[in-house]
Amino acid sequence: MNDKESHGTTVLQSAYATLTRPTTAAMVKMLSKITPLYSRSGTLKKWRASDLQKLIEKVHKHQKKVDMTNKALLKAFDLWGAELPNPENALVVREFSELLDCVNVVYSAQGDRLNILKVHLGAIATREARQKDLLEKHNHLQRKFDATAMKHGPKAAQTSLFLDQIEENEYNLKLIEQQLMRIASSSLREACTEYLLWLQGSIVNMTRSCNAFAATLRDTDPNYYRRLERMSSPTSGVSRIATGEKEIGRDFRDSAREIARDIRDSSRSNLDKDERPLEIRSDHKIDLRTDMKSDVRGDGRSEMRGDLRSDIRADTRIDHRGELRSMERKDPKDVDDWAAYDIQRYERNQEGWG
Image (cartoon, rainbow, N blue to C red):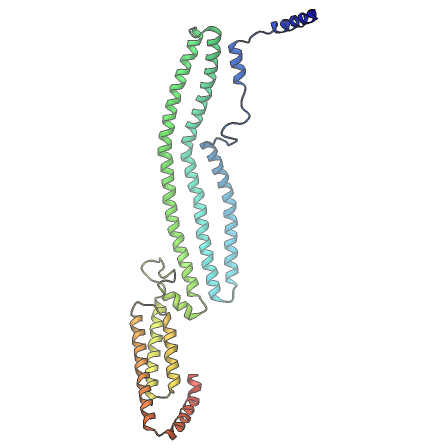
């Protein structure tokens, strides 16, 4: 039994005796080739300025195809709108086509601005590539320095040579990093400023086009009274159009004044003639008040509306008093005759005022 144990021990000892410890240089070389399967930052790619330039090129190529399709769409809109029987609808389609054209122009100009940004990114991409090369060279020199130091010692001539190369590479790397920081601070800010100024101007132009199209929709409303209310209301959303100093809709307000003035004159003349019954005059007063509610306070319209209401109320109040006094003077037996006469007057004027 003891012989078997001693025999097994000698076998194990002889097996381990054949193993030798590898040198440190060999271990460093082996460990340098081992890379982790999953990095701490995940599988995200490290983007550089050169990658952004490639993506801008793809966007520009795709944008050319989209521009051709948009031009075909605008042409189709123009041809289709020209065949519409209603001129107002044709006008709306034409204005909408112009609005789409404005948006397409802005979209096309965006590609040109991105190309300008691509040019500014070129200087940054050059220094990033130089920085990448210096980092790879630094890692290569560091590995050689470690292997030489382990093999020949840290004070050997070959080890000192690699150390000098590492110091030179680190100096160049710091210089490139300073240049990269300076270029990114100047070129990138300049490109972003140019893009911002272009975008602000494009927004102003698109706002004018949108306001013009909104004015067209408002002017071509089939309902005249609703169109008049939208044109004159300060809270309608688009009360003033950015087309210089001229305000859209002034003709509609002038026509509204003329219509209200004609209604007031006709109401005064007809009330003086006393050709309408009391019920029609009171109803007409209410209708006028309802119709004039859509007028906007400003440019003298509120004063005109106040005069019209006060005149109608005064005339109606006089008619009421005159009728009441005449009823007081009449005998009770004549009230029926007066009502019959009033009904006859209403039937006679029903065609004109009903």
